[in-house]
Amino acid sequence: MKRWSPAIVAAGLLFGCSGGDERDDTTPPASPSLVIVDETAPASAAFSISASIPAAAAIDTLGISNAGHPIVVAEDRVYELVAGALEWRPLFVDEGAASLEDITVVAPRRAGGTWIAAGGDLFVLDGLYVLATPLMLDAGVIHAVVDVPTGALAGLWLATEGGLYRRTDDSLERWTIPGVTSVVTDLAIDPTGTFGLAVADGTFVTLEVEGTEVLTDRDAVDLGEVRAVAASDGAVWAAGSKGLLRFAQFDAKPYRHYPLASEGDLVAVATDPVTGTVWVRNATQLLEVDGPTIRAYPMASSTVPRIVVDTLGHVFVADGETLVRSGDMPSESATSFERDVVPWIQTNCAQCHSNQTQDFEDYAVFAEIAEGALSRVRRGDMPRCTGGVLCSPEQRLTAEQYAVLEQWLRDGKAE
Image (cartoon, one colour):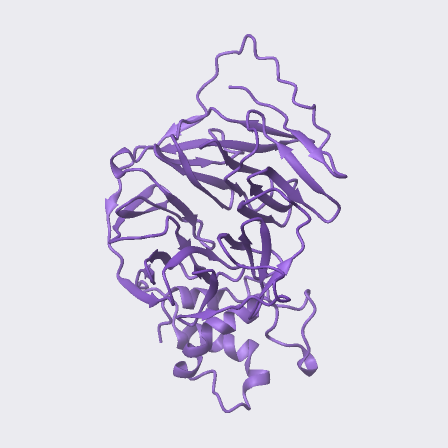
């Protein structure tokens, strides 16, 4: 197995790489395999809840926002799932300046909202409108957008017909992966920005940071044709015609291969943004990989080869003009409104909202607005500080402080 330092064609920034020199491996020592082959057989399972959400037209693709809201594209229009319904988010630009034809990518944006790629143009959905954003790049169709907040691989990454690019505050870099002439069709980077997977020529290439070098590998596991990749905390995943791969750079055995031979070709993969649980799908099933357990859920049909998992653990697929949401009922130990959420409301909301006509401590009232409340808390819009002004970043609630609200929604909003 060979490893290279990628040659980087940069406009201002370089990683100090060796320019593509190969390491001396003429007499490689015998070493144990770095691959674990996991042949766990999936157990049959069924979702306990399912809902069909109508779209305005046939759904072309799916994605997720920074706040965890599913985003749907239908006939070049963008819709956001809010409180159980799809709301249109129109394009707001000067007439003729840009269009949303042929949307290829919908991905979270670290500053809030969603990145949307249409052909070679990049847009932002932030609030009620889709806005064009200057790209300063002519690299053809954009196949993937990954916005990495931290680490050695921090930046906005674009997988395009013209190759792999990274935009930072200071420069735009083009990365040349050894053996790949141009087209990069997918990309996943772990949230810490230390390693990832790129897809080119139907196979995956690992990206690993070692000191000031970024190294690549191509030959660890044969996945056949790689269809999709995704990231979770501490790992990146690839789904292909020969199973599922988990790559975790810092594990003693970094590669775990789930052949899933009897399950058919895998066509999509997504990770739960809260638990890290992985979902993959083939032509007839959704497969849940939850630690050592794999469950297979029947899936009647799906016309778009994508999965979306929101922050409440609900799984979404598209079937024609319908968005299908599936999940499970909460357990007996789930959070409840009276026991868990009301004290949280009293601590964080009552000071400003107790005199309003809506009583947030009334289950029927708060259950209607809970998803919107969580979204506002996440982005720091609520709760407000003295005088009703926005709190500074240091004064906003942390993820731990609003976890009870998130968990209650995830558990199904029990009274």
